[in-house]
Image 1 (cartoon, rainbow, N blue to C red):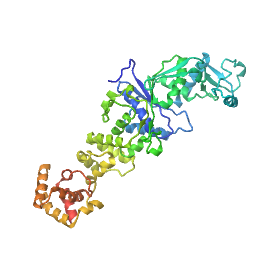
Image 2 (image 1 turned 30 degrees about the horizontal axis):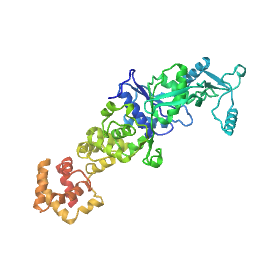
Image 3 (image 1 turned 45 degrees about the vertical axis):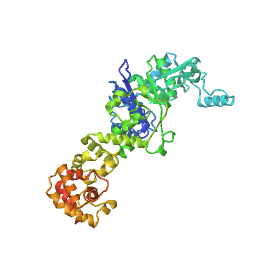
Length: 470
C-alpha cells in the first residue's frame, strides 16, 4: 500500500524551457504525477524560464505537448517562474532587513584573485566574503550582490526518502548569492520561494539536484518555512551504463510518440525505470496509482532498454479499447507527419482493430497489419506476396471464388468452406493461406484469412480474389 501523508500532498514538475521534454524529465513528471494522484493530492506545473536567453515559447509548447501525450494532467494554471521575480526579490530583501543576509561589495576580480591565491596555497576556494559582518553604510552607491548568511559550523542533514540521510558539513557551504548585482533573483532563491508559495510538500527530482537541497534549506530555515520532503531519484543511463545521450537514440518524449509507442506503454515503462513493485513488470495506470510510493525507488541509475519498452507497449496495445486505440493511432500519424486517414478508413480501422492489436508492439506494426483494410482495390502485392500468386495458385483461387459467393458469411461457415475446399484439392488449408493473404492484403504478414474476410465482407473479398486471378 502507498505510504500515507498527514497533509494533502502537493508535487510539482519544474522543467526549463530550453528544448524538448527529455525522457528523464518525463519520468520525473510521471513520478510526481503518480505520487500526487495516488493520494488525492495536487500535481502542479512550473516552467522555470528565468534564463531568458535560453528559454523559448517553442520549448515550452514542446514540453506541454509531451506531457499531454503522456496523459500527465496538472492542476491549476502553468506557473512561470520569471513572472514571480518581484516576489523572489521581496524575500531576499526581507532576509536582508532581518540581518539573515547581507550586501556584498566584493567584485568579480577580487573573488577570482581570492580563489587563485587559495588554489596556489592548496586551501579551499570557497569564497568567504569580508562583508558578512562589515558595515556597508559607507558603500551605498557601490554595486553589490545580496548573500545569505550560511551556517558556519555544524552540519546540514538532508533527510531524503530515496538517498537516506545525507550529511554535509556547513563549512562546505558558502554564503550563496540571492540577488545579483542588477537586483535580479538567482535560480536557487526562485525555486525555494516558488515551492513554498505553491504549497509543495514533496520535491521529487533528479539526484543531480541533491547538493542543491542543502543550499536551498538555508533559505527555508532563514524564512522559518517548512522544508519539503526530499526525494532525489537516480538518473537514467543508456544500455552501456553511461548517462543517457543522443548516441543511445531518441531523447525526447515526443520522439517516442512519433516512433509509434503508445502512451500507456511509455508510462508503464518509465514507471519501471528506477521504481519497482515486487516483480511486476506490466501494470495498468490504476495499479501504478495504487502501488507507487517513494520507498520503491532504488538508488542506482536505471538503464534504458528499448526491447523492454517494445514488449510492454505491445501488451498495452493488446488490452486497449478499440476506439481509444484508433484515436491514438490517428494521433501517431499526425505526430510522425504521415498521411492522415479518411473518416471511412478510420471507421474501417476501428472495426478491424480486434484482429490487429494482438502482437503489434507499435503503431507502425499495427498499421502494417491493417494494410488489408486501409488499401483500396486493386491490391498491389509486395515482392514476397507476389511470389505466392503463381499460375497454379491463381487457378485454385479461381475455383474457390464461386464457393465464397454462396457461403454464409460467418467464421464457422467460412472455415468449413475453406477447409472443405482444401480437402477437395487434396491439400491442407495452410497451402491456401499464402495465396489468399497475397490476394486480400498484398502482404505475407496479416491477420488470419478468416478475420480479413469477415472485416472486408463478402463483396470486397470476392472482388479482390477476382482481381488477383484476372
